[in-house]
Length: 200
Image (tube, rainbow, N blue to C red):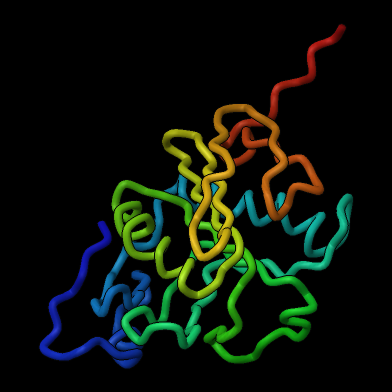
């Protein structure tokens, strides 16, 4: 379960480096949040989403390419010292924004898209702390994927406010910004093959 650690001082990156390897640490709202490594549905949904988006949008196989999509990048965006670092489940940058692969562990360039895969232990922090932070940082699109309720929520930043573009679920096949150039069969994210098209 995700929880804030009580520290006798303001959390720093040194506190994150001191954490054991089986947890993920983030500084959110000036507190050090620690989460265990995610459970199976969370891991599978994040991994499959990376595969489904990586082929057309990173590699250009069956899609336009032009994106760099990464798992759990450590974001140090210089927006707010109370939110540094923040670790989304996935993040994407347009290649023209981040043309080179970075060698450093932290990413200082604002991504154009982030995705948080919700779990019962993390969704409160994802919604109440990370969502507003991503808006302040200028991230253009945010997705919430919930593998337990089998839903995808798609948000876009418009005039410094998040606008919910749609909520999709189940076996729907969707075109979701900013990856709307290619249809996304949600069934894969829930561990199922998409249903066969019905014969007419």
